[in-house]
Image 1 (cartoon, helix red, strand yellow):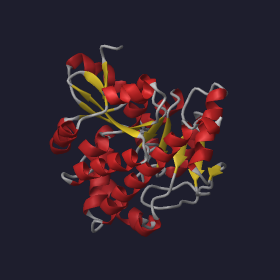
Image 2: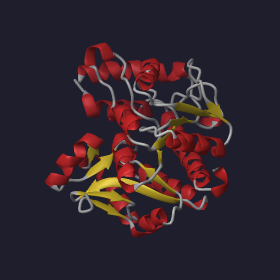
Image 3: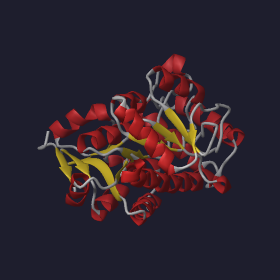
Image 4: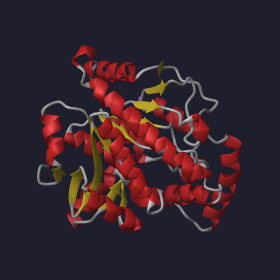
Length: 307
């Protein structure tokens, strides 16, 4: 396994000395946002995390190696190359390594990579989940099952707005993924701060969130937690606004027979292009907000007073 994973020396040193590290997915760089917004955003996220005295680690598969911690030049190359990078979930890794290929990690791929490296916290925009019209396409993201298998907690703005939020929450409960709302009683739905779905567990501080993670570990819990935080109020969009655009996007995707891994990037791109820039602005805002919270939780996790 050591031959297949390459960890940045600074990150390896931090992990050896029990210092806080946060992993970042890279699919939003290659598949989620246009250049140069994608590069500018990831650099801002790295800066936010570093300012909290936490080490950020962007994950990817490059030249047949699982990478933990990319250099700025590599991020720039990925941001420009975009879809030349395979959208890499955890289940794709073996094939990508064998072929010497390159991939941008999804949430599932990032969770698996973080687990291999020994990192406890991962940040994303929104997790994947159960797609709308699931009774016909049975499209359920690998993010959910991988989150239930490995003890890596994910900070996100809930689940992506293109999904069936109700069924996604039901599926998470079925596979045993605990959900904790950060300063919210309702599950956020990516572009919107809220949804009709009330959460059982909420926290008001990063320290509380870190403490919950620790207690699950002490109990021998095998999977990770989903820590859901709403995007800033000033960027929040109404569900009605999103659904009005999404309905057209789904119709167009069906007409073009866009399915499986290609569906989510297509729908998010459609929303971005047909919302007058509002969805792109909200996406950028929530990713930066999530990076800040992930850094705060990671920092709290390693505080000796937490025990």
